[in-house]
Image (cartoon, rainbow, N blue to C red):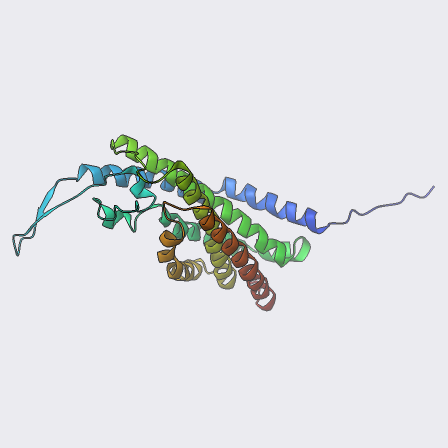
Length: 269
């Protein structure tokens, strides 16, 4: 009696699940992932507490003798965005740049090092030869980067709330509502997909050159960084969420396709 040997077909869905499983396992075992999440959680706490402690302190210009009074934050929500109608609040100059939007640039470090390690170790060449195609590789890296970026935003939000509570800052929303805050955070999370798609493209182009991918990603990200606060303000609505969702999908598909072309047209070593 002849025995028949059946070879299981490695379909697209199975390859995609395998690629995602491997990348998520690598992410959860990566020290960099936990360092970035910890930084996103602790940074707003330290910054808020220090700014609150400096409130009312006076600095004197030794040349002119002019005195400058330091103003600390006046609301917990300044770490998330500018409160409508209260742009002149204390510490607004600092929090206008050093706020939750820094997570959009921080995720570039994770993606660049994550992808460059694939090419530096030869892992990328191996999976393209025996397991996955370049499209699945780009999709997997985009999904993993998006999840990491979303977790960084959530960690920063938690840290901002803890920093406000420790510094005894008010949590009053004024003309805002809880729905506005939820829409604001949801918009930022969806907008993260735009930045992740850009960073993945730069990283696959630079391959094992981590320093080049980080510099390129930071440079490309800065072109859109100033628009984040305008697209995802504290008084965000469903319109902002829809715009960020549409932009994220378009960038992920468009730049993802370009990333695949770059991988196909260039050497993997």
